[in-house]
Length: 317
Image (cartoon, rainbow, N blue to C red; front, side, top):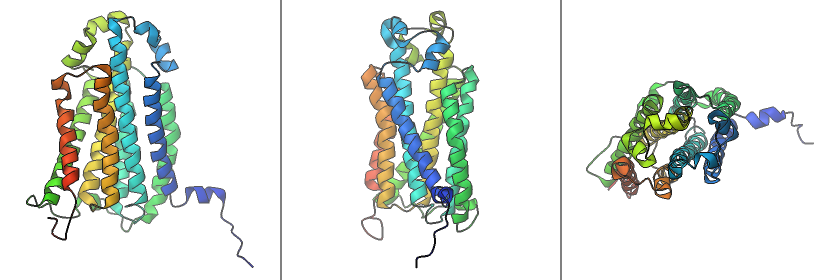
């Protein structure tokens, strides 16, 4: 006779919390793909159209469609950042958290606070994205329940585990230099993301943005007084995504061993993030060198670091 399995469906689905966290990462990836697909369609979301009172085709009549192209470039870049965050969430859950490593749980906690909390920056310029807000509220319980349940997996409950490092960095080796370059890139992403969020909540644009759109801030207000709040929302979204990626990269690279799965997920996430953020500029024709220089530098340093960050022997030579 077989033993009767009295597990509930809910318990099987929730498990130790990791299925919910993996689900969160998967939904983020799908959301990023949806944002990109929707942008490629050339249309605005219904609530965007309702907010500004203009459809994408009506707005296209102004300034050779450059306002539309600018908004398109912001949203595709944001989509790439969400994909990167979702991929990193899934890796953290399936590998270090599954092994009971406390730093992974605390990293998910902090990045979740930054990522989900960045929604509040949208209010800084007076636009509440109802669809984004609803999706955030629907996803948040899965993340919270997954975090609560997975807390029991930890070998210890010390936050200090996140602040440690897996090994000392030896800059005299290729491996050590590669790791240092990746850590430098991650800190640059955090700084860049926070800067974009701040700009999104304050001035919204840098001079190169206005030059590309061939318009002034006052000119945008004349086209539609709700355009700037809408664009500010997009900028804050992207900034929050970039800062979250940088945070996830920094602690994952600092705390974890350079396993093949970690190098693979760094490559996947970086390619999604940089690929969308840089590539979309060429699609829309926004190729100002000064504007793109930080992204170029970050991309080159990142991939160089990833190539070097691989141990060939026990000495990391």
